[in-house]
Image: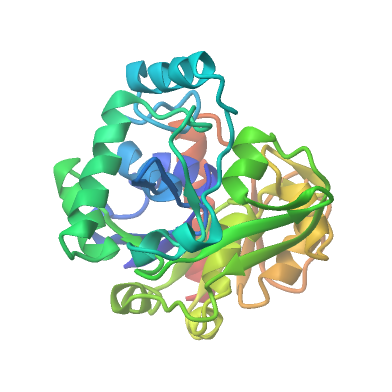
Length: 330
């Protein structure tokens, strides 16, 4: 049994070859929900859905977002209508009262659907509509995620990190904004001053996630701040990780990151933007997988390989290094 902590694209890319190393039927993925948004009334769970679509064989692996070949007629028409009506294209964050009214799981991350600042494909939208409707029928996010996983034929067990809302809010020189506004709309432009995981103080990992964290854990090469940080912000997660073997794959090679906003976010919360900073952020990790060219010396066991992942063969290579590292610390 093994559990992966997933967020963004780093861990899903690793999962692209992990099924050749780890038995999918004995693999659990706990996905970040801190960057979820409610957009036009539909709950969008980007990190859950990347794993969902990958496991279902429909992920657009050029973007690592959405469904391959999906049309976007509704998204395009939303933009046309807003433009024709002279409406600000957004992001249009709903007011404070609307943030906490109605569906609890959507609080602190609600946006109007006018002009739709995130591109949502038509088949992709059907997933969000189904998810939101099942939540409105009274099911938990964990239950809904497992139903969707069945619909996509996943072999792994996919879990959200919590059934409670946690919103990743990035504090910048231009004010506070949800992570999706910061990264998707602003492309990581405003300098980061801090990152807040709003709601984490009252959120809890699900019993299913707690059970999964009793198994050996792999922290994939995802963003330590906004992909893994929301999980660590909840009570009990770090303690669980300290009590089980953990191997982490660095998303950096020394001070260079393969992709994404990790450097700015790491510096914004006080960590060095490097593998050394990742190690400082993960004191619970028993071992690390680092790139052959990474000059970092750590005080924990290190397994080295080429950690760049550009396809399934690369992912399998890194997954085998993870398995080797786990065998040393398990």
